[in-house]
Image 1 (spheres, rainbow, N blue to C red):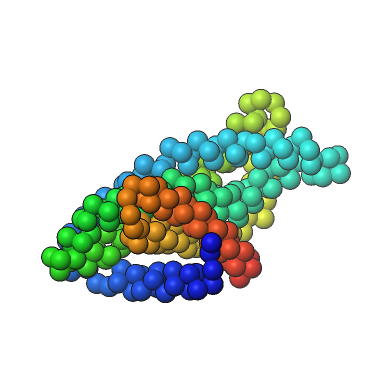
Image 2 (cartoon, rainbow, N blue to C red; image 1 turned 120 degrees about the horizontal axis):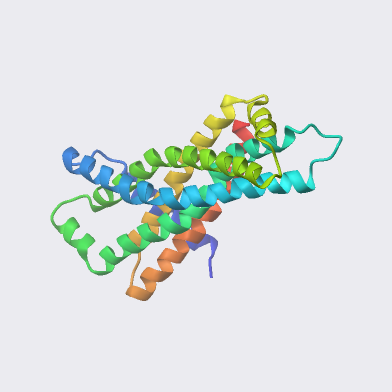
Length: 248
């Protein structure tokens, strides 16, 4: 059962761990190599699922608006306009990060948790290596770097999905073009980028904390992976409310 005392203890451990993580790497060349590797594993390998989900969600949003909201009293461009705003402001930046929290977060927690129970982290500490910095910092910086690119790909795929509905006869390219171009606010795009960077930090840091502090065996590693996904998702949702209120 979660209590106030246990929550404060976990928060203190998390802050202490992030203090160890956010220090200058001992060997910058090794850090840069691991940084590129993490960008590939956490970001590049997530591109297919981002494109597929965003494409179909963009198409579904466009169809739902066309079939259920549009009326003779509304301009035709409202379908494209609303689809663009939803993809920019919420889906590609927030909902997509929630989906990636399940994929990336569980992977990070299980990887670091396995290293903990097999005493690989203890071996690094004995050798005088800052294990928190060596293992966690490349993951945080790697995902924070690649996440805005994934969000951009998500927006593009969602717009292509909306255009795909014109092939089924529900909309026309001219209507969608007008809606996508209508009163475009560049700040909304940058809002999504800012959210993506914050969410990337939350997902990687919380998942790394859950894996780094795991105790026990393989069962506890599986539990830490589940906790990492749940807790990072909840924090992303809380952050979404806060960021939306101050950015838009």
